[in-house]
Image (tube, rainbow, N blue to C red; front, side, top):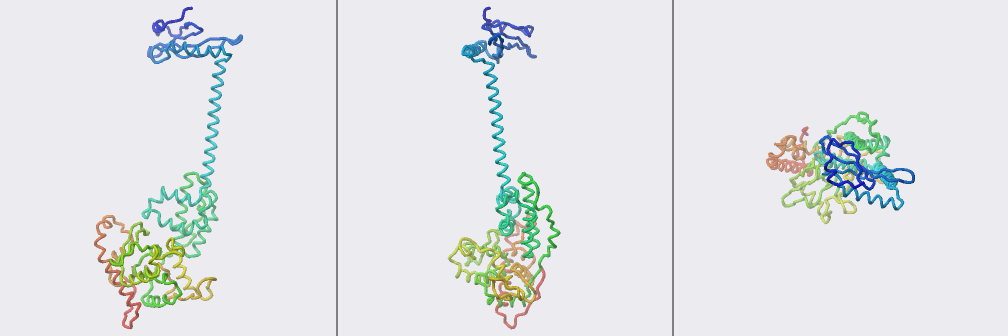
Length: 446
């Protein structure tokens, strides 16, 4: 039978749908008409393997958009070459499909293996690494950028569980953190750390790093009431303190740290982290670039405060840090001075091995005090000396809740703040010298 021509194919109409036609060289087609009336021809090649007839699809002819008649014949010739070489094209095609399927299954298995390895790595994520992940996504949105939480975790969490895998952390580990902190009687800080731990582990559970929250069964209520401290040293106690500190067996830098904190009403941790580059002796200014509220704080230095820095410069002025650590590669640990103060207010029989024997060197009549109480005392004394509450709040570096006031009233406080620090510094000078005509003021509450 003569081979079909392109013109004959183009002459086919929708009415020919279903018609079978011979196209030559064992090619056969079935006419099909689409819903749009366009005609196509589905083409197969027939051949024989032994006594079996075989039929293999070659493609579909369309006048436009399908295979041309020439392409269909070329494809048949390629298949005939395989056939003559002893290869059954259908068997070869089936083998290729199986190989493709096998490759797909193998690729899926490899992907599952990779996911399993990744899952195992995630499961072994350490608490420190989780904190950094959490910090970069959620903690950074806090007003201080998460600095306070980081300090607390550095101090109380990482030393105990920082290198542990998140999946291995149990309730007993969290309870150990709580118990260790409560030995220092820091109820509010303990509750804050527990709250942050709960948020961090909740963040981890949302991402399938662990299945159960190890903080879930530890209740804040069982830790105890906050018991917010309100210890304020009276002026009589201040005079005793200013006298006792010189003979308390503390390093000169530790003495200066407490006196500087008292005069400037700064936080002890921010005081001890200070660098010399932020002190301007000529302008009598000390800048704390990183503080609890995440904002820089500028302190005006009274004569009393300036003398402490001058004493310190003679000791540590050759270093980068005002209160350097033993290796001179960073600031001293904030707990150092706090521990020295606590060691010098112990009851009889409370001496610890390797610690000072001067267990009552800083004891005062009003009971135990801490470095932070000096800050509260200074603020109270400023109020007694006539400083306005808003000015004292600025000296304390408390955040102004009203945004408009925070932006537009900053400059107008500089003068009153400087005057408040000066009045307080002058009063400290009088209390230090203890003249007989000094009138002891009654502390005001703030």
